[in-house]
Amino acid sequence: MDNRSILVVDDDSSLRRIMKLQLEEAGYTVSLARDGDEGFELVKQVRPTLVITDLRMPTSGMVLLERIVKEQLKTTVIVITAFGTVETAVEAMKLGAYDYVTKPLQYDSLLLMVHRAMERQDLLEEVRTLRSALDARYGFEGITGRAKPFLRVLSQAARVAQHDTTVLLQGETGTGKELLARAIHHNSSRRKQPFVAISCGAIPKDLVESELFGYVRGAFTGAQIAKQGLIEAADGGTLFLDEIGELPPDAQVKLLRVLQEGELQKVGSTVPSKVNVRVVAATHRNLLAMVEDGTFREDLYYRLAVVPLMIPPLRERREDIPELAEGLLKRAKERHGIANARLSPLVMRRLTEYSWPGNVRQLENVLERMLVLSASDLIGEDDLPAELSEPRASASRVWFDLPDEGVSLDSVERDLIVRALDRFSGNQTRAAAFLDISRRTLIYRMEKHGLVPDALKEEEKARP
Image (cartoon, rainbow, N blue to C red; front, side, top):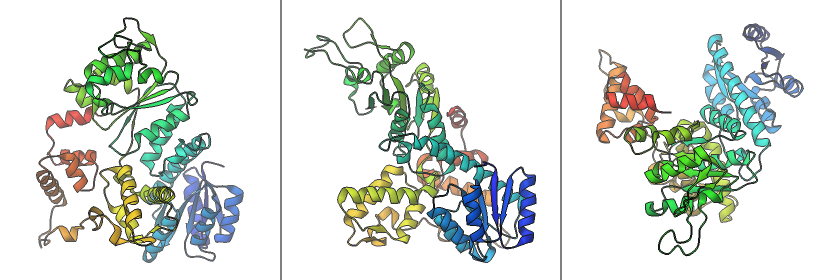
């Protein structure tokens, strides 16, 4: 497959020629077809990276798209539609089209869309190659998503998995950090060795050192036999330290020695023990802010953050929600022995509109709850939990009469941000969720309107 190849399918010969000239001038290899039948044969022969097809023509673009999807031909599709038939283009996107453009074509916009589609296809190919090399239980094929930010994280994880280096996974609770850590381990040279997962926040603080590092006989009252620590149990394999920000200061010092020297000190022992582990750490907290306030060691942070990966929250990858929901529902149906349950279109729309503060974990719980409580095979509006039963307010529900003299959009945005922050007593995370944007986007817009304190600006600059 030529990774710069494009197939244009349109029954308008003059439009085909113009598009061919424009795309070739931009450096792409272009093939042409007059209708969906000819286009489908060329897709099978040429295997283009991208197909740009009109929807309305003999053997329509929709039929061509359906054939490409059915045959699982690995190509990205952009559809062309008239302005009045945008709904048809949206249906095409539900079938698997990447995006759509409307006639008359704006070639600068089309070229930008083509460039983005090519970038996405490159990421898909890289992840596809990785997935084919992984086992079915913990491989990347168990991680659903095609949103560009998420694909980029998977691509980076694919590359780092092959190198024995420390990884720091960052992201909100419920975004799938442990699943990604397992995928990294199972695509590494250590895949046949242990994967030991430790939740640093779940171990009582007075037991952290003995649990992690182990102890020798007689180390303390009740230590009648020696005990291997969890770190030593991962020897030769991968150690996953979840919620690393909860690790107490004394344990941080000892973990630093494991990373620097490859040895650990058991409680009660004066002789260090050699250990060979690859560390993948995870946190939902801002470790650099913790370094600044003295609750997390700076030297340990930089040892952990050799390769930092930021997993985007579910609200920033909404296009992944339908596929995620179907996959999670399928697994829940298998667990509960419910064969025919399905989601209604309205329920799927509500799932896509919701901001999911608990991310994938919350989505999984909501789907399971609806499945087991639904009175019929069709999971409908009555089965939705209260927080999803109403769509998010549109502007028409929020306010106000538009003044005759006009209104400043900047002033409206600033007022909304101020009111949201006031509603949640300055809590930016909750205000951002209320406004259906990420915290970083909120802070960017606060800064634009002069609402960000200097201390917060410095914190954001320091974020990994």
